[in-house]
Image 1 (cartoon, rainbow, N blue to C red):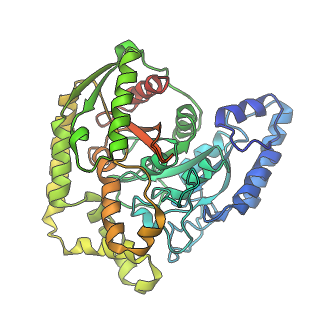
Image 2: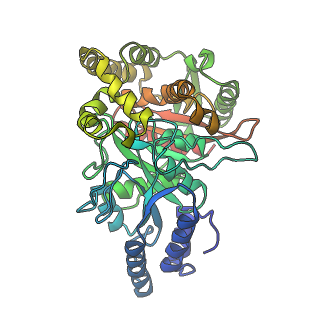
Image 3: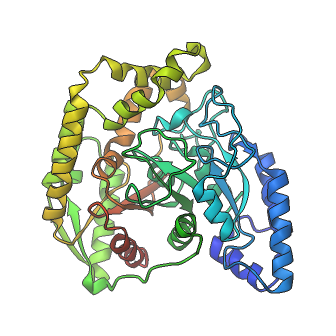
Length: 445
């Protein structure tokens, strides 16, 4: 298989027809992974080859496990894969996993073949995807300067964007699936917390952490995410366009954060959806505006939980062992009054109810990120610019995370510089099945 732009679906069809050999497919993925720069932290050659050979044997015997049997996948380095170290993008975490994470076990049950563990922001604590320990991968379109890959699932996004694998896994606490999807022209889906099995996944903020995938098509993304959840590949039926109502949040139109190209593209997307028979209501969503105000006033809930998770680790190792931008930002949360976390938990519950009441069964349409991927070099050189850009990048995705909204990020073309833009479709907490059906209908436009 020499086509590096295979989707999961197209590769699945080739494998089912016997026109692709699982061993050849995995060998090519391993070769591309080995030749890539800063995309992977470690490769799983021995296991990948063994599982590919098992897949080949099933293929030849006519006993494939299902449509994903033999498809290579990359795992973000927060998922335990037996025998490999789960680094979390850090030099400090160095103990091999004794067993597969539940997601990896279920994906293996569906026949997916693990190729390697992908690079990421240290401890998953940034939306830009930079890592001073293992390098910063990127897949910048065009001829211009390198852009950030988005984080924290940076390596997973780049692995798919570069055609190393057709699908990769990631985690999302404040936008770590959706931001790299947006910056690399990919799809991702943030499930409601608790929908996905989290055993064997390195935590950051347990009440906000969830996991999913990045892929070139929405179908691929949902197919593999479902395999990680149940061990079986399945897709919901798209919702009828006539049955859809989308609320286009007008707060996004006048926010100083929103880049002009993002605003223009959102208006164009809304117009095209209306022309396709989907009802789009333009109005301000109070719950979104209030959520942004609460985060501005009290801070990010994930910061408080990350401090509780990693304070001992950060304080009992030399400071130079960590990315200083990650270490300092987590420890700085300890300077805040602890009662703010209690207020944030209380406000989250109130605003979750408020959003459900405001939408009344409709879906929220918004930009995924307020801007296209920023240039990498200036962010390496300036701590102040890094801090501001990181906050601006996370601003919009934090809303769905704080409210625990299932959310789908979808490519929306490019800006004048050729950089990717993205839109997000979300729904109130727990409404995953409906938002996935709605996203399939929107994506068909």
